[in-house]
Length: 316
Image 1 (tube, rainbow, N blue to C red):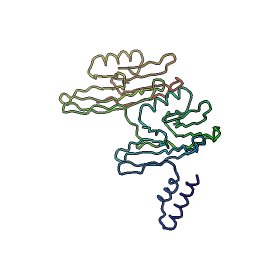
Image 2 (tube, rainbow, N blue to C red; image 1 turned 90 degrees about the horizontal axis):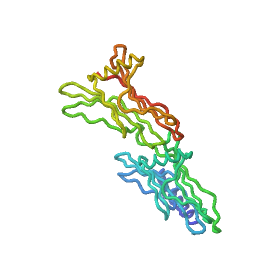
Image 3 (cartoon, helix red, strand yellow; image 1 turned 120 degrees about the vertical axis):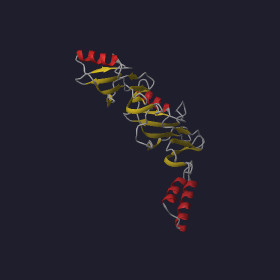
Image 4 (cartoon, rainbow, N blue to C red; image 1 turned 60 degrees about the vertical axis):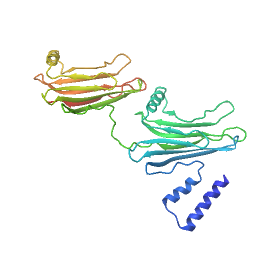
């Protein structure tokens, strides 16, 4: 440890003697005492250090050290969370990787609010060492913060006090929701108009229910159909000129209803509150007025999430 203090003191003295003192040099002074370092930023990648942790292990007569940093591509804004270790394997975490949500789903259903990812050491008989990268998530099942837990040993093999480095989960580049479905592109013969989008995550199934509504028009004839595409499920296709549409609306009105359902649907059942409905509402003239896409998914305990509704006017 003495060699680290000497190095730091020497750097401080050199900085003030030469007069070369600024924010970056001050930051480098503190990072210079680290046993493991994040890489330098480049034109392609921006590096932001998030946390550092070290502890001496008396049995190995060596240090465990970890530095956590965010590696962001400057052109795309995509990033990874990396935890680099001294003489141990590194950890690399992509925030959009499906394994993240799978682990959150599994942890939530087990009643936990975190999961462990990457290199780790678990205590065993006569070996109390611990290394864990814990990712904590909030009630919305989104990563919130990270803790690196580290326990090393005294020379007699007994555990030292646990050390913990905590830092916030890096923010996404964009706050806008990334759509899980896309409407097809317009072509020389067809025109596409996107109308509405809805999605909801089901923890039990570890799957998204997502639907995208769009109007597909034939440019030559002017005729159109309403399409509702589903992610991993069927959707709906509604032809406004089909006789069955008017027939179903008339039948619903006679039953005192204000809408009809069409296409793929899930009806809530005992012990399963999931619901998917595509509703076409009609006015007093029995003409379609507007459409609602409704989705209900499940929380980790099997109860219902808040109902999601996307509403849009009937195309003209």
